[in-house]
Image (cartoon, rainbow over all chains, first blue to last red; front, side, top):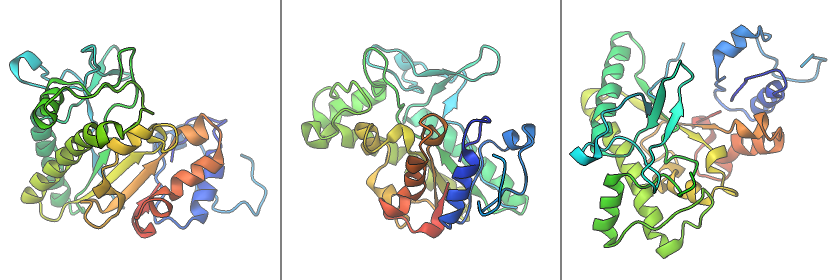
Length: 52
Length: 232
């Protein structure tokens, strides 16, 4: 799944994909995760407040 | 750590020379090559055709990286990423008209390949004869590369990265048909170990998470893959 910029709801997509039980979720591109300083590890549920 | 290696299907300055029999790039009906900007300076890349030159080159490249992975103690897992007939038309139509494909159509169909104008054209024209020819060229190209790699590295496994957004079943019916050979719709017999689906347009451009979720589930809900071999 992609993550490019701040207005992309990729964290919501990640949580939804996590719920599907897929064996792997590949983030493209990983350098975006690093460059933008996205939180890590990524949340796999939305049962706690989280700033997207 | 798991590692998957892939090679782009877009090459910078491939030795394309159709007049000399070297067909390396996909072309629109007006002869224009499929060209995209790499984002690095003024370098542009060209989408490879499913012809013998690129096939041999890619087979050797995949086999070489498989050998390196094996030597490094890794499982040689190789990805065919976004390997497809180009997903956009220019003013003259779709990019199915490289010299080799035109010759193959003439040979197999006894006539020129049908004129396809948009990604959503009807694949059933001429009882699917033209679309099947295109689909089979893609399948044979990939199968030949896999076969060669396995002769060099028997433990290699393969992953298909299939972009659903540009092959959308509802809006790109022609591309959905030709860019997903029937052999690839289930793990068994596909030649692939995993199906990585992507659809960046759905969340990133359409901002539609319903379509993103449909995309994530597509391989096992609408195709016949088992979920354990699916990745997003």
